[in-house]
Image (cartoon, rainbow over all chains, first blue to last red; front, side, top):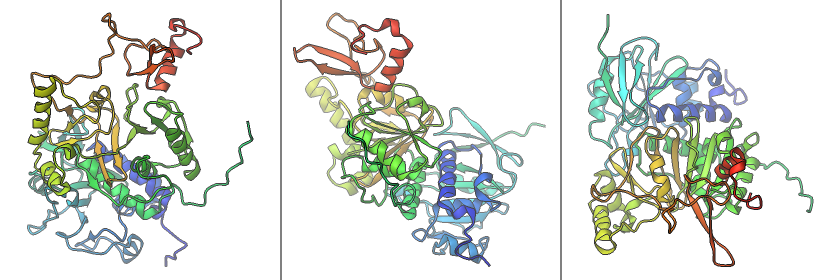
Length: 193
Length: 300
């Protein structure tokens, strides 16, 4: 049993600061992959992202039950549904359900578009490659999406169609993260055999 | 000089702000970067300095800093003015482990009031602006609700009209600082009261620019490698400050002789104006690098 004195590394203020700086760098440079291993003590990177950003003031949706009761106690976030949540945590190996509709914000409040934390594996090393461009990227940057189901990229394009509305994705594997803010243009790369 | 009383370490958590405040700032910062130029609202906290003295920049910097950072604070290019020196000392007091510096090249986080350093910032550096007025539309629209709608729809017609009227009345755009700048083709930001000279540095930079307005409770950002265009007409190009003297020569800094920097005009007691770099660190580095070219020893 975990006691209050036995706080996992990802919830320590010092580690959260380091995690945030890595995330800020990822968001400012879409598609760049950061390794969080030094700050998470074996916890999944996706949990570290939520731990760095969430508290009792923002709602989190976890339809697939990826978080444990212990995680919820430390996060302190109210649980919510996908359309209402500020943060959504999903497993990216399966396609988003047809009725999966995250908040996109409004013209006057685009910051209320959801942040979707997507768990994959092999980020940056395996899986289909995409070519990214847009703000934060000098010309283009290539990213291997790991086990991310291709439907996520298609659905994302629809959600982010009308800038400034949209969602911001944070892809996480065991210890690495990469961000795809709504401004990033994603193009599939031809498969060279 | 009186011996300074040794200050006890402050009895605050690291970074002065409570953890929830930092998290809220961090969420706002990530959204600001994800939506370049959009003013993200946040709950600006009470700080131990008055609003208007850089509380927005201060809160952003405190949300960023970790004990491996090196922080520099400038006020109009100077590291030693009251505002800059006090903020830097505050960071050292409430963020144990953070190193203070005046050298641009050594800093990881630079908080600035109204200048961008002359030296091009690297991709591992973050520049935090203290912003008095975050909204470029405030000169043409008094209602904040309407301004938000105009920003969302990227409707800047009235701002263009203001610039056009300037041309009709004065043959010149009369905005000397806080020059409205379009970020990534959508939002127009107020880049804080930096001189026009600094505006082109926002365009396709290597570093991340973060803007904090404490009184107005807004945070916005210009990510690296992002287009930032000052509003201008195709037949009236954007111009930076002109430092040409009456003989048509570019004025040089009286201290380091540089002819490629933003100069401050210093009126002497005898009415004679001298010109000196506004960015003191850059000036000092230039003077060090080319000692033989210095005009007078006394000035250095």
